[in-house]
Length: 267
Image (cartoon, rainbow, N blue to C red; front, side):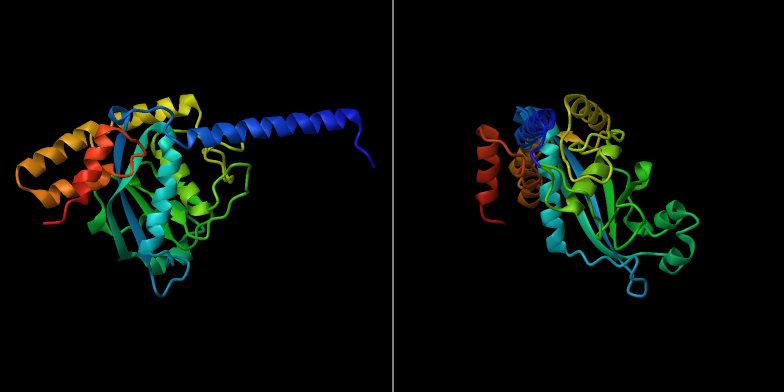
């Protein structure tokens, strides 16, 4: 049966809306016009939790997987001029693993937090813990860490991410930067969707929250410190800082300088 004229008009309107949203999202996947001086670098410590006797905890993600995940997280957060660099990667045994299955139903928050290895917790970075199974796709516990399950699943939306884990990670990092849920299907802060878009107000709020943390640094400060270390004949330390800067998706003089430094042989 041929749809009525009002239905055809409505369908056409929805197609135009979806096209507009998709083009908006793709445009914001770049840099939103942020210059090198605007970029903020945030340290991220990734924990791959292991528990050979508790399959509900034991992640099957690998070190190689984390490279892909972080790359996709940063493509989302490029909209806000924020990049997350890997402060360190820990493949480590969860503690109190035997209590997890027994107690998670009653108090999942306390049980999850109890899994964190104490000697790898620091205060000057974001912590993301990957494990096999929790009830939601991910949980942010204030400054105590983010938990993401490697079996995460999302409802696909037009222009959304092609993989759940990076999107869930980026979503929870949004909460860490003070953003609340926003139930607009293509938005990064929508629940259970694959969208990765941030609006202007969210970008502003996330950047303001990031600037309040003294361990999230502007790109020019990191570049200046790297140059100082190199001048002080500390090439290994300098290279570590140049590596933090290399994924900022910009051209220009600073970008050329960073790539030139990284092209030099290691000493």
